[in-house]
Length: 332
Ligand code: ACO
Image: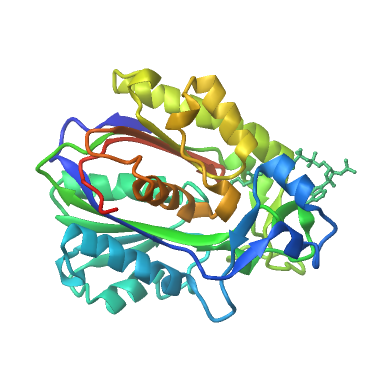
């Protein structure tokens, strides 16, 4: 699916917030659980440390402060929001949705609220859905959350996945007008590659002895990721009549610094325009892109007028890009 934001009302982001759990887990700490080294993890992934939720912390606990910050920045309260979408593969539970739990906690009594599952691409899918509802006039102010305490579904004895992921969440407020923030989207899915990254036994399909942990074919996901990050961004830029030289800030999904470097090189983005925080947070799945946006805001790189290109990819297999003009002055 590809499209430019030409036909509906103008939509932009007016608030941004993020939250990671307090607990820092270094590469060295993971050596207690699996046969690995700090050197291997840094060389193959660029990750130095990640945050991990406690046993008591669920997605809604991590997301709530991010939502409150995003609302405060937009100058809004929960009751002003009429749509909440939470992109995640680790909701508090299958139902009620984490979006409904957050709506209740925020006092968003008039909001439609639901969760969306598109792996690590979830935040990009959720932005596109919210954009569609706002541009079409169905919603006026939406809260879009991306977050995953992915540590909850990791096998702490599997070194091929344990070292890659971390926990975190981010949220944005999206509003109708007056400025044109969203410019276009490109979204896709290849279900044929689903078994490269999956959670057997997590739904209605029967599996013998499912252990409830993420399974991944790292090499296949690596090949897929390097291909779609480039292709999706190029297709979207072309359909919007822009080139990579127009992009001020490139925010790729934070899965692995080698994947990011490959995409950056192929696309021809100067390194100072690329946001990277996978070294501090690992792969936070649906939280990755909003966390990177918030990082760019806090270090002063995200400014009004800038063209921001975001591309995610993940389980499904799925991918998605969005091109936005940043319109909001961010508090330091
Ligand atoms: N520590 C030490 N050694 C390890 C570890 C580890 N944590 N994990 C694997 N190894 C070993 C392997 O067993 C293998 O050993 P062998 O040669 O004796 O068989 C060796 O290291 C090399 O393994 P490879 O899998 O070939 O290593 P590779 O260079 O491909 O890196 C990695 C593995 C980092 C997983 C890489 O394939 C990758 O990044 N893939 C993409 C993963 C990803 O991004 N997933 C999520 C994307 S979607 C989403 O975000 C949900």
